[in-house]
Image 1: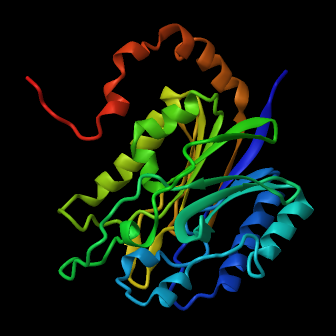
Image 2: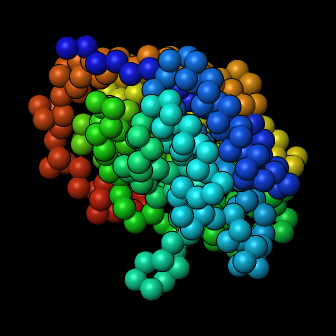
Length: 311
């Protein structure tokens, strides 16, 4: 029996410091309407989709920092997106900054959620591979303070069954680490959705700009192919208050081929029909894990964090 899902990636252009959540949600709803017109039943929105990428700013006032976080979801600002998606029968993935309390302590996460076509949250992922730094770097062109503003995700790489597919999530820097995809691959993941906000400039060393896009796509394509999964990657991109981020939103097939890619650095929707049988075929043949993986030789992957030469 053929299983196909029409899906879309909803790229966002810049969100500036002065932009309200309500204005951003209007843009998300416009992209959702476009997705509905294209027949899509699942839409992926970017990382931290409701605000500017605030970790680029050094802040010491915790109240000011927390103003970028959401203490409940949905809330008054995001309710129109949930309601519209429910009206259209569209599932979606949304990234935002989550403020919560666990065991009596305030915790802050870089979070994404899976919302089903009925408007119910069915899955949550909290970013694990936090990039950047926690100290102030006054000589840097901008800051990248995810290690300061977020706790490391504490719920692992889970998968959920939604819309007749096994779905998983990751966020931005997670895409660069093969373990991200493999843990979900070992759970039979068929669709991996991710949002990202990736600066054009590396603040630590000079890096040609073209490498930023090359490594971005390389990570998506390798993760998709080696785990026989569709990867749907949504950028927030363009210059936010003068600080530029890459675009390159893409839908990558389980073969590693790019099925669709955004052309702009503005709000843009890309769509394709995901043939879920394609991943099943690869998992029966080239990547039949149960036949070919040799876990007795992989111990270093979980027993050692850093690289060390012993010869």
